[in-house]
Image 1 (cartoon, helix red, strand yellow):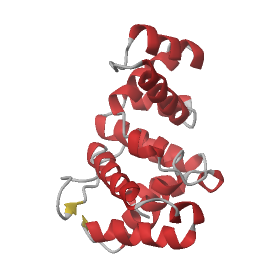
Image 2 (cartoon, one colour; image 1 turned 135 degrees about the vertical axis):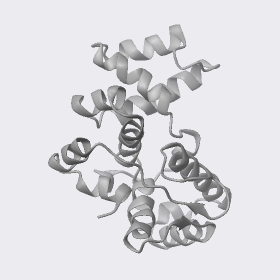
Image 3 (cartoon, one colour; image 1 turned 180 degrees about the horizontal axis):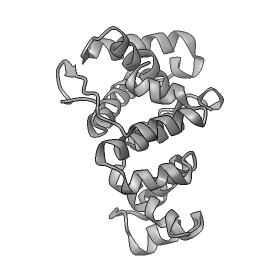
Length: 200
């Protein structure tokens, strides 16, 4: 799927949203459709956001991510252990953001393969520079965009439990994920996404 996605930098204002994703997942399991969920987000302010524009933006982002999850994964996101639940949210981001998936697949996964346990600023710099060379779209982005993307990537990985800290040479942490969830993701043809997270 990610190859059909255009490179975008919008993730810099649309980070991990773990608790928010869980809240909207529960509404999906209750049988609410997209329109009903959006209305609830705005009227009841279940995401606890100030402006209506931000409510709409965050709801739209989360619902787009949840579209790539089947009922089994949504149920595990809500009722599974915390580590697995967080990885399911990360998986949904990988499936909807091409550049972030490529970072995980080309940088994070390599770290696992070579048993390198830290992610450095240089890793980010090298990755973004290579993408600048490969893509006319990415080449047009200003330096500040890459700075913000790096910040958000680090924050997402930290909140998902894959980094032990957000500063300096960031040590990688490999969470324990429910093997049934891993098997399910592989069975539906998405091995590359789970391998980007845990190696393989």
